[in-house]
Image (cartoon, rainbow, N blue to C red):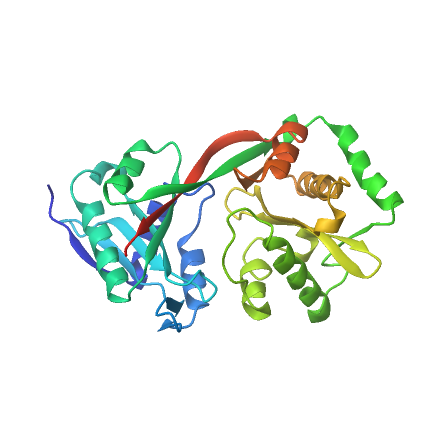
Length: 327
């Protein structure tokens, strides 16, 4: 076992933390992105509801430093104002060369001590479904699998189902009009989009949190790096927003992440979701993107069918949602 120092994260640690996170993230992130995100969040304010459950937001962060004063591990415990009462989300990563020497255990203990101090009831983390060592590490500490999130990748150069673009024309012939947020800018239309997101989020398998209010939703869905108004495709029926697909481009890979798809329940089973996804593919091609990446819950069978069976997305290592009950 090696000797490690566990301490709070400092600003100068962000490059090392980005390198660590890029070992487990599907798409790379930069130190600047991490710091910009941190700067956009006000200081934590935790409180408790009438049932004594943890509420509010906070995001303490720790690093593990070896004897050479190199950052070889990172952990963050966080909750947003809309996180389910009592819950804390956790991300923990240790450099592969340092695994099995105590850094992960020390970071995990630090997070659990803080979680107990603030009276959290559950710790929630997402782990790669093919990372057996990390899964065993989590299970030994009381984490159990709750859900499976599949990841899929579409190689756009190999996409040949051109006939699927007919779904766009079919939707238009039924009276649907397709626009992007660039076509209808402004807060009034963004609020319409926010409401569409809110309503359709309720249908996502496993979604049991509150939904962010407009200003916070905008911060994390429209203002984030890589999302542009022309990447947000909207289906309209009259003046109503009834469906949406949002793309996010990664500044390092220039690939796109299929961030969100939402269709009002009364407009489903009309191939409207397929039409929106084809518009996304058209946008990606126009932007010279090589691949699209997305995630789907294992229980979201209709969306998996569109992505895998119709569009040809190929399976990639996904994530298990792991939960540890603290009391």
